[in-house]
Length: 341
Image (cartoon, rainbow, N blue to C red; front, side, top):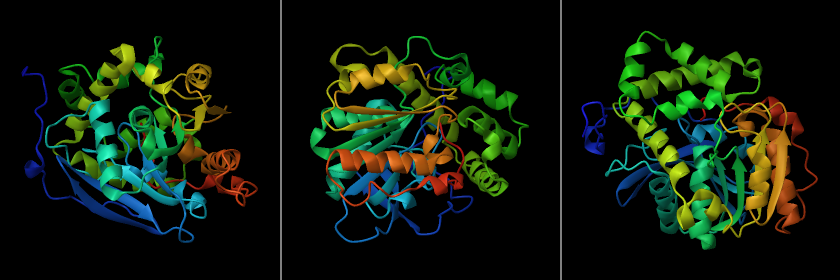
């Protein structure tokens, strides 16, 4: 290992939690131990018994809290759960220190197999979008529908605004960045993330920013925070370079599940120009573009995303009584954790 590499931090080296993870009204958290990983799962009580299950997977630097604005808008049609990927949110690092796209996909598959909840309506944002694309391709039996919000699928011409995030994957960059930014406050970091991830950061309520600052302070006390970020960023970059049958675009073409694609016109991390390519790649796709949204449309415009998903359900014939519901009034509701990636 190079001296510039960050060492993997095994779970037994994890320090005691500095503060409790925030839980929104109606949510609950539980810890699930699986071979090689422990996952924190955020869930909600469904509106009624017998609803089909859903699983939500966050992006780089995010957590299950990134779905807290969307999930309650779908409580009447879905039995909702969101997972913290290994090393993110409240989940400790994986035992083997593997943060590749394949390893994250394996974690999702292990959870679904162990819980017996599949097939599920599977959602993913950014890194999570790449992860669930791989899950849907290799385990179609686990997926009813696929909803991708700004999925991190390979781009030949990466936007300049996305380059700093990609640089986290390079050996030595994280130690350098931590030295440069050691005097930055948690609020400065949060506002930087908001500027990167939101189409209009000014729409985020101050209360949500305060909650995000508290979460940032908690995460920065975790000994594996930057390691998880760097290794997961490296996993994205590595996935971009893989060709053949294991390439993400090839796997997108193998997805059988009806797919809803959501892209933001002001996304600084995933190019809006990739929307049409994605619509062609997924064989049974529907495309929604939101001109004013950034990278986390499910946090900026949760009502619009919920309505689009209800239309998907109606289109595939799974729900006959929910397509007419109008959730647009909820677009000003935000998840308390405003840090997605």
